[in-house]
Length: 112
Image (cartoon, rainbow, N blue to C red; front, side, top):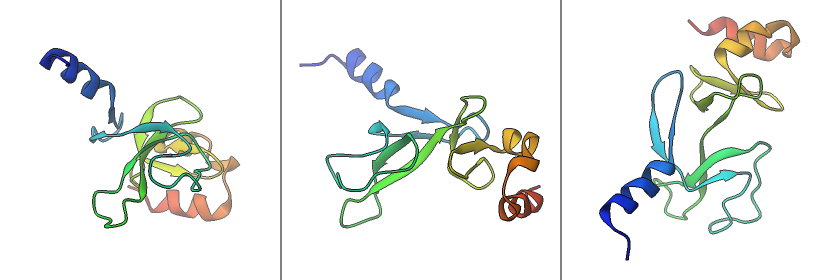
């Protein structure tokens, strides 16, 4: 049986914190699949995945990922990151704006 300290330590290891907004969220797996729920669903990136607490069918939910440029952990909120073949935090997306497709440049222009 785990001690309280061990339980706290294992819970801390499964917490993702967005480096931009500070959102802290529990996750189950960092990877492309959450095999316990829907093994046939595969993300196009390694992401922090958990079961969707709002779905009655226990579907997987991506709550964050790593910026492909600077490797920061970021949540999937539009104010923190975007995905275009790979995940970008907004500061890196802005720094590499000209390399992004026109539709994503337009989305970036809408951000404060």
